[in-house]
Image 1 (tube, rainbow, N blue to C red):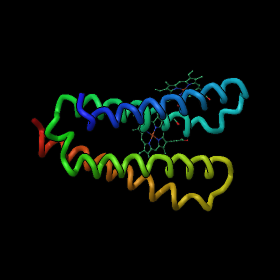
Image 2: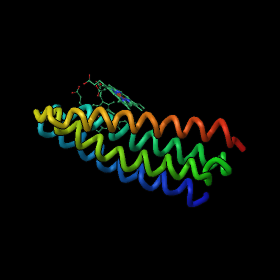
Image 3: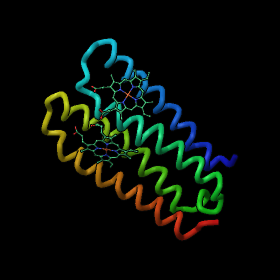
Length: 123
Ligand code: HEM
Ligand code: HEM
């Protein structure tokens, strides 16, 4: 497996640990307020990063493109910011709303970069 795929998968594992850690905390404490953070750490972190890593393994030309690097950095710089903003908003700091909105749009851009990269450089 190339380093390009591996970096997605290793980060996915980090998110898996964080997300399941938060899930166990929610279960044990009975405080489920951060459910959306837990769900999206799992789904935009563990699940999406793993899938992208595995998909790039089968599309090595796309995996090594400059667009893929841009996508990697955009997705992975945005996700922690988005989760921080979602945590703040959920726990009662609405001032983090604009950051949440901006990071959601940045995440959409990262997803569109992935789509563009896959359709352009398939093999
Ligand atoms: C030990 C592992 C896990 C624990 C203890 C755990 C715990 C929880 C808890 C306590 C909730 C809140 C339920 C509620 O308030 O209705 C929740 C929701 C959720 N969890 Fe987990 N979770 C775990 C693993 C995962 C994994 C691996 C995923 C996805 C890959 C996941 C995805 C979700 C989603 C999507 C929701 C929201 C469900 C909804 O919309 O009702 N969880 N989890
Ligand atoms: C920029 C990306 C995303 C944004 C802005 C977003 C936004 C949202 C919003 C606003 C909700 C409703 C939360 C609530 O009612 O409290 C939600 C729920 C949910 N989303 Fe996403 N989502 C994104 C990506 C994803 C992805 C990639 C997946 C799956 C692979 C996913 C799966 C879910 C699930 C399962 C729920 C229900 C659980 C919950 O309420 O937390 N989302 N999302």
